[in-house]
Image (cartoon, rainbow, N blue to C red; front, side):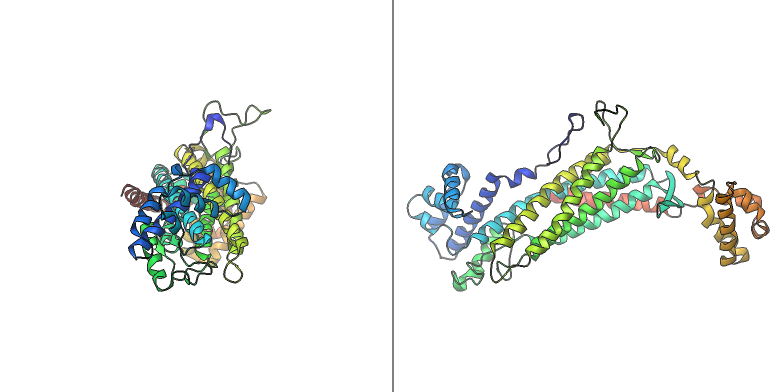
Length: 455
């Protein structure tokens, strides 16, 4: 778990609470109850037994100390819980607990219930992030800065354009996460080897009804070797983490004194160093980058866990469970910090403009070349502007002067035209449009997510 300084406290989004021992055991009990109800509807077990199992499938009725003792004795993750539920049920109802199921049917389905709850938290967090980005895009749609490619000044851009890029990518992650729900959140009931031999012809109907009660879909083939749906979710979180890391790293870089274009929230009293009092460190950005790297590192583990031998293998189940849980916990941490970072991000347009002027107008070379190209052809114009640009750098002379020295430039463009073409505010393309459109997309996507959460 990422540590937080007192002056920069980050609220717990509630994801870790979903994966505590109590939450895990209750999710398994929820599956056992849904299984019993489905079987009662199909006449496989008595109605009275299903009602009693459902009533007692709550941790408050069970002796957790007995469950833990049973776990220590048997080394089995589920059997002690089944024993305790059996004991808690009155009459002969306990004898119908876990009828026809195998451990992985319950534990995997239960864990996906937990992951689905985390998924809903992630979507709420993303809605908040998108609203903050919409505000930021609108506020900075005309904030000029040097567009950089390969780490060097390229052409002028605006900070709002940069934000629009972030929005575009994050909205696709929302689409991916929502689009995967039907594949990822599925219930499994296939028995010992996934063949449904224990339930026979009623097996598929039982799985369908159990899944419906849990608000899930049923697996088409309830094989215990199928892990692609779980690996897909880890992969999607890994992709989301890559985008968040990209945003965090950009802010980390632009916060350096050499850039000074933005600063993440640094509340009064925040200490950056025990020995250097002046430090205003990008702690949120660093936390995001670190968490994102750990999430992405879990993707190979999930892919390895797909390679289950024969009809089941505890090895790969352990691997997949670890990848899913850790990816979810880290994603909650990461997104919570993204919310704080973007909500309080400071932008310094004056410094951006200063940086834009560092090259002495060289950043406008493309605009000059294209305009000159209308008179003498693109390639000749490129050569002329190239020579003037290189001379400006190697001779440490103003770009205006070296342009004026070139006869092709002076013949094709007047001094007033050159002066106008050296104005970066006139060469930002569709940056404002992209920022405004990105803000609208972010708000629309956030509204859909918020409507979903309210329903």
